[in-house]
Image 1 (cartoon, rainbow, N blue to C red):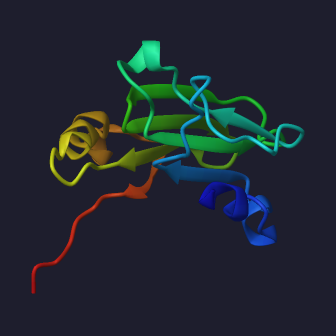
Image 2 (image 1 turned 180 degrees about the horizontal axis):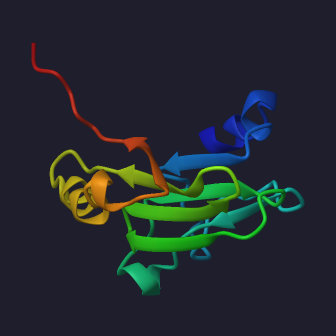
Image 3 (image 1 turned 180 degrees about the vertical axis):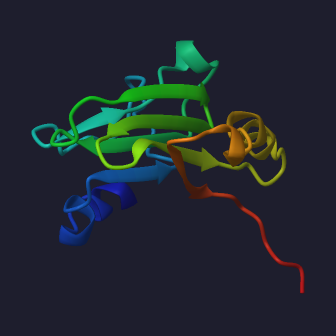
Amino acid sequence: MVIAQFLRKEEVISADIIAIQEPWENPFQDNTYHPLKQTYELLYPAAAEIGGRARVCMFISKKIGEHTHLAHSRDCQEIRIKTELSGELRIVNVYNDQQQGVALRLLQETLPPTREQKGVSYLVLGDFNLYHLA
């Protein structure tokens, strides 16, 4: 299981937020591997909430404190964190299925033009499955 090896690395578990695309699927429960329960909260959208098994998840350090989690779809989720210095930080985790491209269209709808969002910063990350043909 690749995620188990990944979540053992010191440089990974020292991060405040860990974003995963295509997480391991627990065949018995609607969740994924979570060995960091003491220090991280797992943000794994429920299948009933998003219409199928999630293909994205995030681990957020319990040091972060108050945050809001939004599950836009099985392929797109967002964390909103209020900060004292810069307003609100929104972190969007995306998995783009190469055949469908649904997540990219949803991402365009989720992210408003920046000039309309004063005091809001975005960090978009994920697996976009986009390849240059040259």
